Amino acid sequence: MIRIGLFLFSLTLLTFSVVTTPRHTFADAASDIQSQIDANKQQLSSLEAEIAAFQKQLDDLGKKKNTLQSTISSLTLSQQQLTIQIKVTQNKIASANLQIKELSLSIGDKEASIASDQDALSKALRSVAEDEGVSLVTQLISSNSLGDAWQQVDHTILFNRALSENINRLRAVREELATNRDQVTATKATLVALQKDLTLQKRSVDAGKTAQQQLLLDTKNQETNYQKLIMQKQAAEKSFEQQLANLQGQLNLIVHPGLLPKVGSGVLSWPFSSAFMLNCAQRNSLFGNLFCITQYFGNTPFSTANPQIYNNHGHNAIDFAAPIGAPIHAALSGIVLGTGDTDIVYGCRNGSFGRWVMIQHFNGLNTMYAHLSVIDVAKGQSVNTGQTIGLSGMTGYATGPHLHFGVYATEGTKIMTLREIRGASRGCADAVMPVATLDAYLNPLSYL
Image (cartoon, rainbow, N blue to C red; front, side):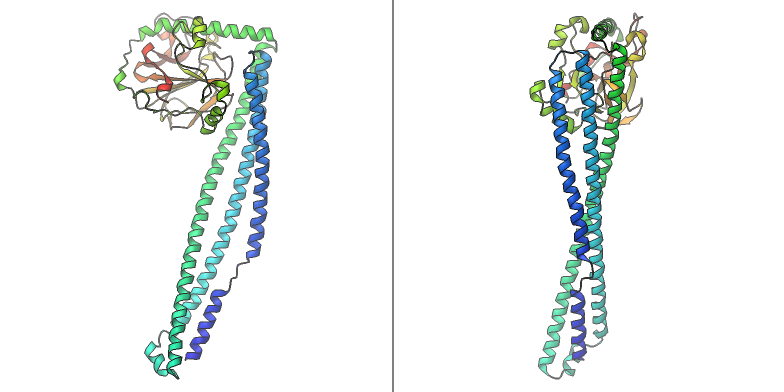
């Protein structure tokens, strides 16, 4: 009995020590994938350097006088920069796919290891089951000597210890397998986000090309025509602001300050991605601030120097420098109160908001996004904080690509045509847009 038990015990230990998984195959495949990932990282560094070089050229152009050539050059550089950005995103997508492949290999290796351990455990437990009918007392009585009996007990203890260690190892492998699968899930989520970014970037290139073609069409590629276009925009904006100022008092809307969020509460998010805002912080020397703001709210130097445009009421929003096609994000969740395009009204073209979106939030505030090249939402649609609602542009009164970001008190705001208010009859009279009483215009920086 003891000899048979020893033989079975030795056979079981041997089973525990055998590893059937071809580890060298897994290691070779993993090494090859890692080499590809490393190569992608090197290419990524080179592409990011190209993007930085384009950004420097764009910043240098921004310091020069606004001419047709500088505007066209900026649009061209922006498109080239976006093309490189698309390559960066494609590189990241390829790397993410490689990481998924690497993790899948690792998961397969771990599953093979688990299967091997489970098989060894099954064999060991079957061996135990064959002898469990013989009690320890019986084994002691049937032993040739007391030494043989104690040796049988020692073997049993060793077997139980080996069994416990193998079970613990099996649990550890399973935990590692769960971790790997979580990593795959996270990498796939990153991949989905990158695919969305890629789609946006391609649309941004298209938006930039459209804007460039329209500008060349409007100016016939002549500098004199471009300067005339700017003067026409200024005249149209002056007419629009005059009409708006004359009619704002007729709205009869009352704003209750006590119903608004507390100033400095930070209830709104910046209307761009975190990557965009990080890039702004790195260009502090160009804008004099960390946020790419080119014009503040109220009586700014530009509005004071151009009272004919703003009718001495100052700037009713803040402007962000943003290349055509930059994704614009909702500053807070809410309902799209309305969208529109003032450029489709002949007398208002180039003189107002261009393509715009207004979102009503649930805290007494509305947010306004203007001069867009593309609108991605519709009236009545629910949006979440950070959701892309459109792409930046230079529609309406804009001599360069930027986002006009306004914050309004909901109580003092309506979306309508100026003709609906007594007295409007020309220019932007038939353009649908947000209209507000003077005290409904709020400083966006009070809530960002």
